[in-house]
Structure formats: structure tokens, C-alpha cells
Length: 460
Image (cartoon, rainbow, N blue to C red; front, side, top):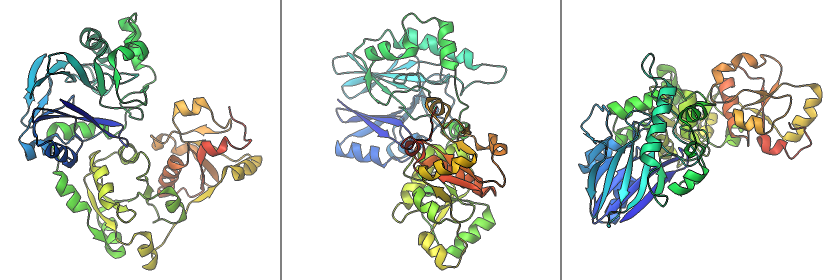
């Protein structure tokens, strides 16, 4: 028996490869299926099952493509209602994989179809659970994504999740390994550990939601307290996972189209495509296409695209470093943004040589900010609430990046103002959004709060 976690840091997502005696199961695959096909080929094995723990909200699964390529059965838990052919497992239904078995345990609460898969080894001993978004390390899945008006509330779902954990997960042995669908950084929970694998026994000791003496009402209160609003693209990804999507190869073929500056500009004007600059933030600061949005590939790219562009039907053209075109299109498709129409051939240098307009972003270091603070300049912190609470410039106004529309009225229209984040990535994203909306009196603080802490600027 082989069990391999295939972890994607950008999405904080874990997919799983299980092989026994030439048969393979994949759990919660990503959109691009080549890694799973290559892995099975190395083992001279056949992919038999594709298990989905639930309809994912934060990424588009590769279940349909993988099934089409391999003939493997797609398996969901009870109450799933996909628009395509799939097996709906009964509670505690057992699936044989080589010399091992996988049992579907219905664990609703995060969503009503949420299912945990229990792997038993060759001797029939409970070995591991693949808990999806039911149980994370240090946390549990948020119960507000599947709520429906006048039908079920997040408190109802939290209560159902309490029952699933207490009645079906916690009775398992302490040495059972926990393989969750996400780790720290995912918007699917609020308190996840940085580790991606643990034992159930350790989670019973460390996870606040698994306290043995916790009442149902305490659980509901603690799990629902402090939940940030989910990103706007989540419902669209659920729809794609439930109803289907364009084949991955077609998405790549369309997006990998090179466009000279004239063709690039024409497509933007004719289609309303967003110009998405995915280079490093320093390159964007030095020179970029006016009104382009910066979200760099070297940060948490896909989740920020989903949160800020929001509409997966949005057409996109790319400004991208040479050699990273396919990577950018792939990572966009992971969160359902399949309408990439091409990229700027020759990059920003070709744009300049064509005589096109170029914009820049003013950026200052933390020492310069300190000097300018003598004049009582407006300062905005674009990190999240928790980061802000842990330490910030006393004069700074909290305007978290994830929901820019809520804060537009806060920014001065004429006076220069300053943005900082943790290290300089999110502040440039925020500045690019503001500039795309005609607010050009914005100044980035290079190095963010990490650099600010190295000065004697007061921190509270």
C-alpha cells in the first residue's frame, strides 16, 4: 500500500494518491491531471476510483477530466447531486482497492454531502482518514458555505458538524492518521495548523473543536465566531464542480496564444478583458500597463484572483514573465478562471517599444514613511483582522485586501496616502486595484510591516 499527499501550497490544498496491488484511488484531485496519470504510470497501476469529499468551493476539481481519461468511477457521499454520472456512496459503504479497502463515512456539516474516507490496510486495521473539509488540523470546516435562506442556517450546519465529529470521527483510534483537504492559508477554515498530516489522537488534544467536554452549543458558538465572509468566487466553483467545466487542455490551448501589443490592446478594447499582470511586484512598480491589475504568481496567486476578480466568466489577458505563461493559465484554471485569451508577447518591453503608455507606482521604504509621518499622512493597513490585532501602526486604518469595495470611500481622492501589508505583496495588489479605478495618489510601503518593525516607528 502506498499513500502520497500531493500538496499545492498556493491553494493550501492536499490531494491524495493511494495505490495497492496495481489499483489506484485519487482523492480530491486538482484541475490538471497529468501528475496523477504520471504517478500511476510509474507504479504500472490503473486509476480505479476518484473520491470527492464534497463539492469544493475554493478550487475546481479534476474529477471529470481524470474520469474521462481513465474510466475511473467518480464517488461522492450521500445527498450529492452532480449533473454527471457518479456513484453516490451509502453511509459506511466499502470500496475494495487492491488489498485494502476505503469506507465512505458520511460526515455532513461543512456541506450536506461532505464525506470522510477511511482507509483500512491489508490486515483490515483502520489506517487513515481523508477528512476533506470536515476536519482540518487545528480546526474544522466552516459551516456557512452551504446555508440556504429559510432552509438551513450556519448554526444548523455547525450542529450537524458537531454530531458528525462526535459520532463518527472521534470514536476512531488515536493512531489513525488524519489527511485533510487544506492547511494553513485556506479560506475554508480560520485556525488551521501549518502541518498537513497528524494523528487523530493529537488532534483530540490540540484541536479546539474536538474538546472532549465541549457541549453542542459551545461548539456552535466557537465554530461560527469570527468567520470572515467567504470569497465571492466560492459559489461559482461549487457550480462548476457540480455541473461540469471546459476540458483543461482546451483552456490551455486558448490561453497560450501570444499577442503582439496591437492585438493585445485590440482584444482588451473589444472584449473588456482584464489586463492581469502576474510578474514580481518590483517589476510592476517599475512599469506596467495603465489600469492593469497586479496579482503576482509568486504569492498566493489563485486565491487572490478568485477573491478579487470574483467572476469566473471574466475574460483575462496576461502580462507574464517569459516561460511562465502555461503556469499562469493553469493556476487561473484551478479556481475556475478559464477565459484567458492570450498573453503579451515580448512582455512589457514589447509594449514600450510599440510606443504604448506605461504607468508606474510610487513606492517608498519604511524609513521614508517614518519621515513623512511627521506630516500626519494617511496610512492604511491591507492585512487581515488577525494580523492587524497582533500589531500595527497606531494611526493606520484597517482596510483588508479581500473586500476592496467596502473600503473605497476611505481613501483620499487627492492627498497622498500610504499602503502596507506584511511584506509588500498585498499592498501592491491593493494599489493596482485603486489605480485601475482612477486613484493614483497611492504610495506603496516596500517590505511592508516586516520592514516597518525594523524602524523605530511606534507599533501597537
